Length: 310
Image (cartoon, rainbow, N blue to C red; front, top):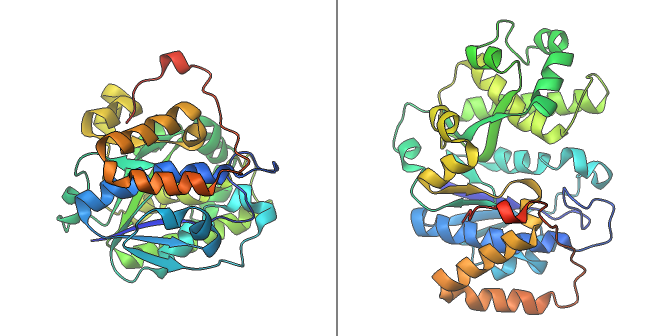
C-alpha cells in the first residue's frame, strides 16, 4: 500500500512559536528522518508531499523515495495557526489509490500496519481514539444542536461518545483510507466544518484543525458506519494509558511541542547515529546548513520524570 508523508513550510511558521522571528521548523528534520528510516525499513518506498521552501531548507537531507512538489499558494498564512491541517487534506485529495499517511513525528518500531493493509474488511486506519474535554468535549457540548442539524454528528450518540461526554475524536498521527468514496465525503465535511468555524457559526472553538480533522473523522466514521482499524486499540489504551500502550507495541507519536524539546531532539538524533550510522552524514550535512539559523528549543517542565520514548 502507498505510504505517504507531508511537510509544507509556510512563511517560517510552525504550530508553536507563531509570531516569533525564528527558524524552529528546522527542528522537525530529526523526527522526520527517523520516521522515514523506520517506514522505509518496514514498508519500502515513502512518498513525501512538500513545497520547495521546506525541501530546500530541510527535506532534501532526507532520502525520500518519491518527492511531490506543490507550492500551496492558496494557504492563508495569517490564519495558519488555525488551518494548518488543510495542507494534509490537500495531500488526501491528490491520492488516487488506497494509502496511509504517517505524520513526520510518528515512529513505528514494529510492523503495525500490515493487519490493516492485508485485511479487506477495513475502510480506513487511525492511530487511536483521542480524548480531550477542552477541545472535543467543549466544542461538542456547546454546539450539539447545531452539529446535529448540520448532520456533523449523529442525533443518537454512540456508546463511546456517551461514555466520554462528547470529548472524543480520532488521533490521526496515522490515518489512511481504502474506501476512497468515504475519503471524498470526509474531505467535504472537513471543508464545510472549517468554513463554518471561520464564519463564527460555533462557540468554544479551540484548536480548529483538531476539530475539522480528528473530531470530524470520528463522527463521520460513526455516521457512515465505517470500520476503521486502530494502531493502538481502545482496550490497550484503557489498560496502560496512551504512552505506555505505544511502548508495548513499538509505537511513538512525538506529539505537539514535544518535537521541539531539546531532550527529545537529542534522543532522536542519538538514536539515528547509534543505530543507523549510514544516516550520520545526512545529519552532518543538515546541521552544517543551519549553522546560522535562529532556533529556540522548548524545555520540558518535568524532565526528570520523562520516560525513554524512542
